[in-house]
Image (cartoon, rainbow over all chains, first blue to last red; front, side, top):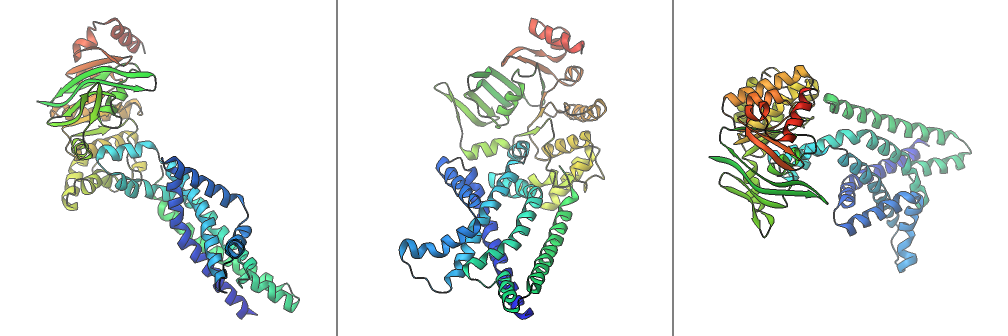
Length: 212
Length: 253
């Protein structure tokens, strides 16, 4: 039983890592597009954010999974579900991360930009050296929330037939007519989250050397 | 020699004309104080001089650098390169300091030197420590701004501006966010700079200080220069009715 759950956990962890690797940077692009002075781009970003936050992630995963076949008659191999899963999670989380980044960037006082401008920093230098480090500190609590949520959202991959930990627990529970697999899975999710909480706490502590 | 020259500067926000045909010249070693009621255009003038705002019309130059020239009634600004060069000629001290909170005191002062001026780090550090010592902040180098009092923060901001070796230093109400005691320590530093013939333009509500430290005073109201002259003359014997009224209100609190 533990072996099957362990295999499931590996997939769960993979979905988690792949989503972060893809969505953390993509979120920057979403935030920049959303804040763009070029109106059409900003509108597209707003629509993107609105749709991805306004529809269930489960539905989005299924749309990406089956959309290519129903819309275009594309026959995709058995590996497609993993790609569909990664794409769905990344697109969804990039919308949330993008909004967190935006709130962080917009919370930096104008005076910081003005001080940097008068001192001769370029726009890129101002963003990378002055704004971004301060944004990181400000968004940590919100990002922590989102990252913890992601741990548990990985279980939605079960709708695509991916045997991540929740699917594994479900199968085991049915086979053994027992709640134990669910209980163990729950415990593993929780420990996973605990570890992440600890890491987040450390990062927040390291950034606590100043307040503004 | 003129460090900064503004000719017929005009600026509007929407329908409101905030600067109505302002001209001024600041020569090397001059200390110019700008006084006047809030909303009179003092801050906007400073923001235009420091390129945080663009003039609608008029000409602006820093020494031999023509930042903006007037063409067909409009201010035409120079290239990015010209503006970048001009920015090395002035420093600005803000009302609320605007230090970088995530940097130590020393890094606040030297980071622009290293990043913008490409000065070697060791050299920048030596200069930074020297300036902080001059501001009476030795021993605070490794603290972060939030650990300092407002007066200390403002002195760090002055050190940061001085580090870039500007030809003119602007102050935008440098003590308005400070209580009287902290105000005194910041004013003392500015007085010392004046004694060293640092060229400065100071927007302030401290009338006694303005009279003592400035050579010239400009009184601005409603977007215009209402009166200008020798500092002690303008403060002690204002000619214009509006200047008189303003100063009277001031003395009565």
